[in-house]
Amino acid sequence: MPLPRPTPLDDDTLRELIPRLRRFARTLVAEPAAADDLVQAALERALTHGGQRRDDEALQPWLFSVLYRQFVDDYRRAGRWRRIARLFAADDEAQVPRPDDILETRRALAGLAHLPAEQRALLVLVSVEGLAYREAADVLGIPIGTVMSRLSRARRALREMQDEDTGGRPALKVLR
Image 1: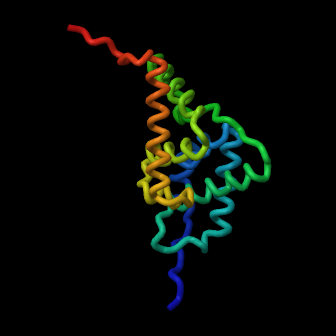
Image 2: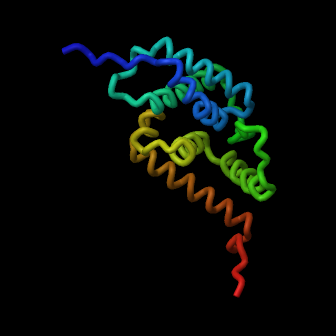
Image 3: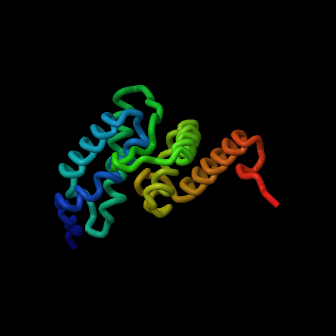
């Protein structure tokens, strides 16, 4: 029986996924230009090796996997680690965030920056990109049990950092 043929990678579908790929890439590398380079290299790899994707394999998780593998390859080749500088960038420059949102985002980014890369990437894939645990496991090439334990540790570490920021007290004062 012949292997299933992959669905073609059409331009419109890829264009729709580029902002999500860029956001994920920005969680892996510090500089926006480096994130764009990573997305470009991953898309190039995906277009070159698109025939390796099974017909039943969802395109978005497969592209996240290609991007992550490109990042790992680049990291190994470079032999050094770059810290996360920014997690999110406003795609719409006309939208001005509220000061409270800026403060909360900075706290979240600071917390993410202190997590190990494996936990940070997993947290972004599941919490920001909305991938299921199984899809995240496939993207990162790890067992689903590892996904659950890393997520648990990452969330616990973020909660502990938040507790340190608030001195162990709730962030809001209860009024009677």
